[in-house]
Amino acid sequence: MNSFGQKFKFSTFGESHGKALGCIIDGVPAGINVDLEFIQNEMDRRKPGKNAYATARKEGDKVEILSGVFEGVTTGTSIAMVIFNENQKSKDYTNIKDLFRPGHADFTYWNKYGIRDYRGGGRSSARETAARVAAGAIAKLLLKEIGVLVQSGICAIETIEAKEYDFSHAQSSEIFALDKNEEQNQKDAIIAAKKKHNSVGGVALVNVKNTPIGLGEPIYFKLDAQIANAMMSINAVKAVEIGDGIESTKVKGYDNNDQISLEGFKSNHSGGILGGISNGDDINVKVHFKATPSVFIKQDTIDTNDNEVSCELKGRHDPCVAIRGSVVAESMMALVLADMAILNMGAKVDHLKKIYT
Image (tube, rainbow, N blue to C red):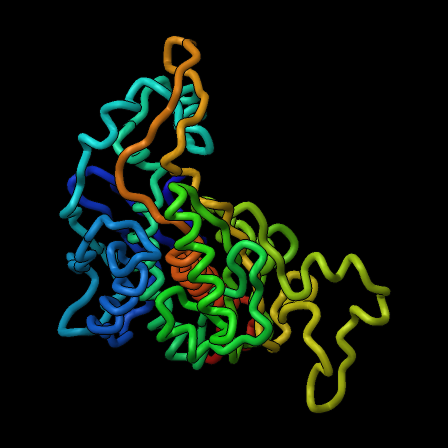
């Protein structure tokens, strides 16, 4: 499946070493002002080749809008967006075209389809997420209309965890670090692994402010379930925590409950979601990325003829995929919330009366 969402729905297309990537978004309401500078800034946050903490592949990731926008405003019709690839080096993959890279989707794609695009993984490459960020930018422009803010940052690299969360600092950090006091230690861990031709994992924190109460569709389209679905669809994500997540299994029920006063919730262990529906508090989600599987160390594997062989990778890869992955996670959160906001319009007959009477 290459589509996501119910009402605010997007589909992506393209491969890592193909001519282009892109997306088609359906269900975008008419009348949204399309800020092209904002959209490109979102792409620039994720794009490769910016510094030593990302892949050396340099892509401009310039977005071209093909439809659905007229005179700077959405028309209510499908929005098509395209990003042309500019810096492929497919020859870097010729030595692995007949073998399966450990930790990658090569083995499963081959066994499922009987064919695979070995150039950077084709469709299974994280390059596909550029299209998600483009779609997420449109979702953010919609959410801006109702005052919802989605932001993210890196709260851990390997075992080096942030002690405090400063999203304004993350915006200016080369690795989107939330804690300026731990940032250099996190950077050092990435560079140390890179020098040894290895990689490290990390954790991104996605935060949502000014969330409306009532987003989420029980029973089988809960807000937290769709957030988990969205995050787990991102390359290299192996776990998702909502609110206190794992920590909520270690405390008593009384301590985990968010007590309520007339001023609101006294705590936010739930991460802003109760019964699969947003409660109006901040939504907090931690997204855990494994260490990038593309490492430049000899590994054992098999080839398409079931021979045991050695795998030695070439090419350009992120030493820590969590960094740019945090921007993708932020975009996916925006896409989920945009979809849920439109779905929620039919929750009460009063909503319909406001439109039709």
